[in-house]
Length: 448
Image (cartoon, rainbow, N blue to C red):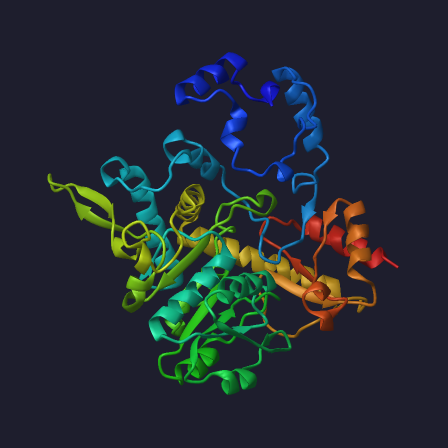
């Protein structure tokens, strides 16, 4: 490893002498001999800075990115426009290196942007309290389920099959060791089957989890679902939302939702090959003591000046580990900052404009796609940003043809929903131009 590590043999010798041993191998003596590699790593000889830069640049060109492709793929991660101010602020050293702000007296900048982020999420969702933050949309749902179990002292979780399949897998993984009884509620015409939900909700149910807009992009009837859920005493309603959609849709808080979660990637965070992303969670004031993760509060210092601190830390594992409400012990600091900068840069009007433009673009693409009859709507419900169509052509063949034209096609639904074998889910954001959408339609119509 020497050519790839800056420590010279003399450096290593001095460090070994300092800790009183004569070999690096001694540090690994607890590892059984039969599981060791026992040979040098298969690495190329060391390169100069100029050589390695050229090598890595050539290697990176093998990747196809949204800089090369027109993106119509969503299913949980979206190609939204990111204002340049987001990267400018998050690249500043005082933010870029931020981590867990245990010492409030030297973390005021970090604590302030977390406080502002929490406030923005509360305003966006219509809830009382938000944290900072969770790892992604999937773990946000799992943490919300844990919250509901802690609050209700029940272990049965109902989750709609219209919730992102990956989120449901995370929920099952997390719930397995906690002995959760996870029951999936069926879907009908792309939305949660309300008749089935009514039969499944009992006095054993801790919470019902739905997503709106759901995985198919369809807007669920949250008011009807809320009435079914709250008809059973103590049962909580957890809803996963697309934050961009809240620029034009009613807030979950106004519809009676108890816990709001979601994926914050749309809020100024690039696709970056699948992560890291940003999970958010917001609750009513009654449940804030069960909320996992960081909570930043506003106070005053000894001079009466505005100041920020971590608050309600008894929830944290570093304070009372055995009684911690969650295993979350750090927050997605840079992504939290990015989301805050994005929301402040756009403001209420800007976020609404993004949501409206996204709606207009996606509905235009939908109308043009089904116009000839070659591609048929999979569902007939109101949708936001994403829609599903089907045809007699296999999705892989369609996406291969699109890729040949530098278009990143939609998500093949058959891998998660076998009943929709030829279904494809397309996402159309505010970034897509009419020319790009028209090219998509033209290529699709030309596929035999």
